[in-house]
Image 1: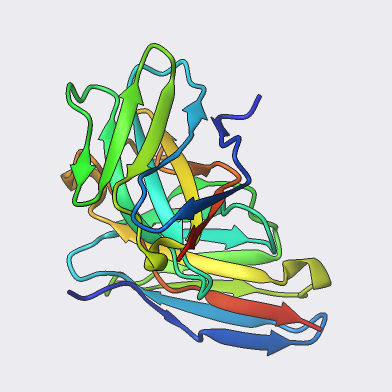
Image 2: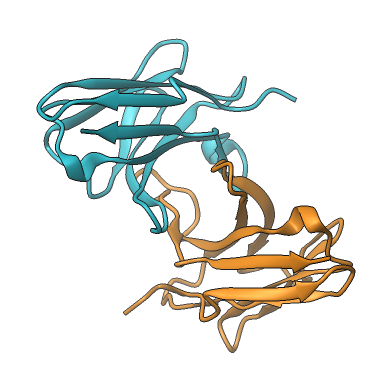
Length: 115
Length: 118
């Protein structure tokens, strides 16, 4: 079965650079979520989109922005990178309101290292 | 207050034994969902099992079952006949409320690292 695809899998950036993370949800999934997992931490919710509109927002820094496109893929843009942004970034997708359980299926993650 | 509490940072279990991973939660919302995810050392987050607050029966998925005790606000994961491939970090997570715009995020516990011993 098709899963959530994230690219790139690994990314190395310097401080103050920008990074773009991409997420391709499971087919028919119209809801996308972004989470950040620091080393040894649990995942923290950043932002979500339903039908291309931002639907929920967590502790996402102002330096980060995201959007969902017409084909439902999503991109997380990160600017002025800081050392503390080094983390594993997950994208998840779900059927949203079309499924009572609304199970979020995660991609393999993008491991961002800021040097 | 922590919304999800996992009190076992690490567990060691003999292969083929059953294992219970503890999870307690805190919410005043009558509608919520509880999830368990597995994170192997490779890093991906794998969905295991779901329990809705209104579900009358405990959820089961193959070797995984969820011991849901609503009055005690606990949702323990039980893995039967453990295998070496079960070695991983396990996270309990909760979504408060039913699905609604702006109410979808999962809140995770700190996880339990399970190691299966041959």
